[in-house]
Image (tube, rainbow, N blue to C red; front, top):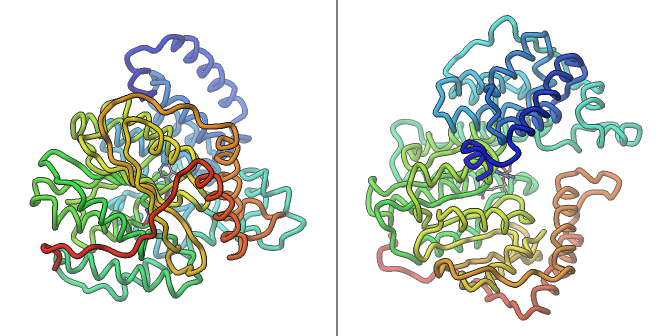
Length: 465
Ligand SMILES: C[S@@+](CC[C@H](N)C(=O)[O-])C[C@H]1O[C@@H](n2cnc3c(N)ncnc32)[C@H](O)[C@@H]1O
């Protein structure tokens, strides 16, 4: 809600704007040293404080001074967030800026589909060429420390590395070549898409992390556990390529009471992944049912109250960074977004873990918790938990979580970064590491008296085909 309160004039806002103005002046004097994370942080701070000058104008001002777009490209999600917030027509232009840095043919084609062939103007400077070590040093100081040690840094710089785009290109090609062409049938084509993504996930070293198998079943069970009113919406936090968003889209189509109710909103911070998800949803015939919004969950979701109304969220599926689930959920409760008997579904609660969310659902009088245990999708030895909370209405906060749980939450982030290759000196996470870490996290839960029910599959429902 930070931006909304900023718009209405938060205390100290004038001082903050003066400080940001000062920083902008300094950046203008040292523009060649600007890097992508710096541009991102500054634009986000300007946006979040409702700075009077539009972030898009500031950004294009930098590009007009011959700054390489590649040095700024990760800031594009803030520009898209702003454009969507203001329902601005410039969205296509910002999308077109993603192409040069995504490099590979298929990803670029998908971006072009949404950028609607907007050409980059000649004042935009892009240094073409292969992976450039000096850029890595400039943009990823943490990784640059390991330059001597590793011959191929690309492997360790997901997402947004060349390697990551190559992998995503292969998913797009796999689906595009196999999915039935022609007018999509709902839900038939969407089910075909889901099956293709599952086949891909199984066949390619399991790097495509989607909520398939038992996890998808739990999500569908949560969806079907409540009656949907015409104004309600299912919200997903963490879209990736749109697998679980499509699953929710199919459920909404089947059980939501017809097209008038068919509303799923999914939020993805990575704009290129958002474009890929939009592409798949479009192929599956679900683009009228599922809306992909770009930005961080905490920035985008307050807009859902404006768009759909108070108490409109009937289901909230959290599948992104487990250590912040609880703060984002608390924000949604505080702004009145959570609907009557809304179901909160959280993935990866035990691996790498979302302890503070579990604490909230278990001990807040506003929530009734059921936890399910299952094996990870295509990892038969690795146990994870999903948490389902049913909203009982605003009834107060839980007692504070113990310090050991706070420390555990901090440590889950460390494991998350390690799993993405961002802790190269500690090595990759192997199956044994994951099994052991899940056990370590679950020990905390069991010690607090929180147990999970083994997920044994969906109960047949009459209306299921
Ligand atoms: C595990 S993937 C989601 C998978 C997806 N739910 C599925 O099963 O098909 C997590 C996604 O969350 C995105 N993400 C991470 N932090 C985010 C945030 N704060 N806001 C929005 N998206 C975020 C990541 O870019 C990534 O694509």
